[in-house]
Length: 322
Image 1: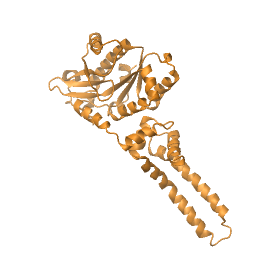
Image 2: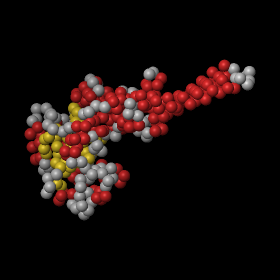
Image 3: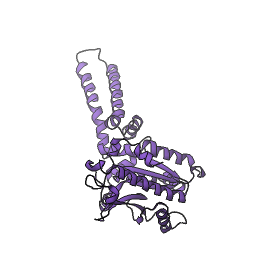
Image 4: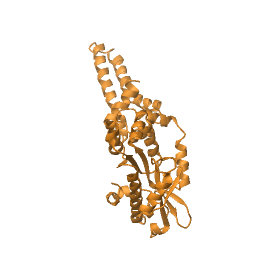
């Protein structure tokens, strides 16, 4: 569960990654800021109206809750300055899926696209909230595999709830834990290099994500390759933004070896009758195998986010099959 214990267990290195709202040293977080839970105005809670959901969370947990049109995700938290009224987006965001919707999004690939958008929104603590009993849907194994991949391979915090009422409670507990985390780490984070974006800056950043680039399309293509996670796809496109740029990088590994073998054959066969075409073929095959191994390992060696299987599968897709 994402509670006080989870935050306390985080090492100092991870704490330093979480953005802090602007503040002076020795200021008390709760004296300067009010934490507000923001729910997306398109999110639904079955028969419950959004206003009823807001009232339920407010009354149970005594926390402010508001509804806005979020550019990404289904819930996030802002810290509102009590004097200046400026709103800063805290480093947490939730994508909420009931099991039926999750299964549908897996089938039509919305699932990967939505997670990619979350990865690129700039917030560090990504929470994937799965609502309902996974065992009640026909594709339960697909949903379980997706949850496992999302948490273990892609670094999301996957949370489960039994239904709407449990989700409301989960949001309340999240909010209390976030208030506790920032209260305990506010002064210590005075020298943090990362400062929370204002809400307007966050909206602007996310709106820029709507502009689909060749790199975005390439990332989505890579995510269809076995063992390639969202993080791996983004790591690859940060190095090679397009398919041609990656193909060229593979070419740079193979060309010098082929050229040197080719040159050696035509040079040395002039001086010796023993350097036959068969010898040339054997050497060329050997160099080709060395080339292919280097190509298969290239992405793994360039990024810790790409494992050996993903590196090999991407090479096979682009170079061997292409």
